[in-house]
Image (cartoon, rainbow, N blue to C red; front, side, top):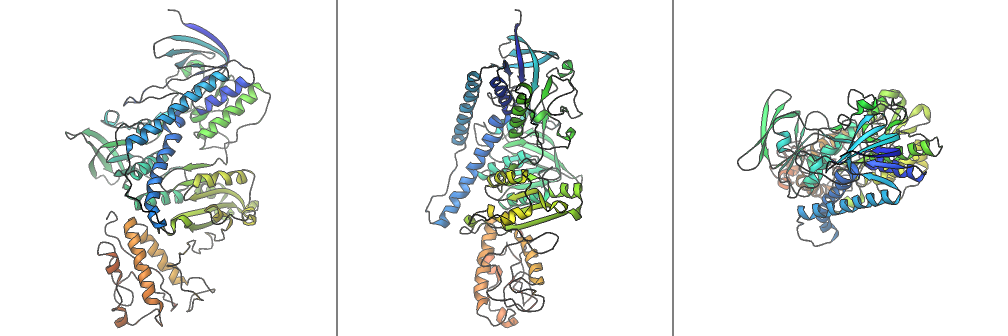
Length: 612
């Protein structure tokens, strides 16, 4: 049978968010437009409808499942607010069914949108025959030869599998996890990308034992201080990490579990059995199997397409989305793979091609959020990159830890959340980076992104009156710089110095902790961050009781015989949580200020089992 033929002004290859936005905008300018989209099944056989990665196997299902985990945490917190609720129980099948139902409604909506906008949709796989022609083959084998004056390639990417035995046969990726018909059970997530940590976070959050295997650093490409906070929070909430390891094989066991073997950086080896093995080690762009060489389009060594204003080396062929080589842009950008970036670039491209407009896509200062259990929002440069580009002397970093009001009643996380502004001093402290770890980080970051895009300075933040009590107001209150060396921690009521001026040598200005207090507090914080949530709650109880015991004493440094009559931290926290006895006898955890300040400074602990 001879192939059918069709002619269009614009052909878009790829039906993701960027391609759909570009096609509809071009059609609104009166052009004849077609879209080709076809999803090849993943190795386990998962496939999906129109809309691309974000809608089907990315942003949308990811955030819905992240929300499921947050709701579970919220139900636990509810008791502190007076709600009498039974222990929450999660149903994986119900969640997946509802998530997939929502996705299918979006798929239907996108097809309807194309129809109502006059865009022809081909559910067919397109490969180039020449620079102006593609061959589109649908699932039944029907062939259509399509010719177009302009072509936009936005084929996106797919998850990468490691080249090890059993990976494709026994493992899954983010292409599959959101449609799993049965609970994942004990899960190993291989990788430390944002996809890896987000998936590990919500799987653990809905109740399944989760381990992350990490080869090097978490969240490569992001600010590493913030990445460390995200990782630490996950560890505190029960996600285990195997660090410095790479998998070497996946094998089926008689019980149905998967045995994963790995090699550590020091050459040693290990193994473990898991119900689900999820690989999230990166993505490969879909440019190698579309005949792009027949179109004459040049590729970078990574398979991506170098572009200038979305135009390839072939003047009438353009690229948007994941396949753009961000490193080849001027200036380079790591934001080309973000869905809103592809949508914006697609619309602007169609306007330039068919509406006589000139606005170009700006890939800088694009906000993003990582939906780990402790959310991380960012816009602008990571601190390391800012220093590299502008020099450390030209950078001022304002920062603060904080505790959301909502976390106070359930006693969740002292000095866990964190905000910082990275400012360029020679330009009036223009803000070139904003980073926040805390609840609703994305909502905060989106709002601040507008101001930063408009060139906001630190003075603009200082002049803005915050909304109280909110998390976002922290950015209007930042006063401590990293350069000063002062602590950015905020003390809750039970850990603060006692009321009234602090006394004793080294205390400095009235109301500030003395130098020794800060040093002891820093050591205590490091120990606390390695504790499980339960141990931290027990630690808090001990601090409260010891503070009450000391409150009426004439001196913070009681004589040994008095101290020996005071209940020790071990009695409150348990042998598995701390070692030593209170300060003034022989131990190291209930430390008192060396400057003779009449105040209990902090509690220092040494965990022996963070999983207890």
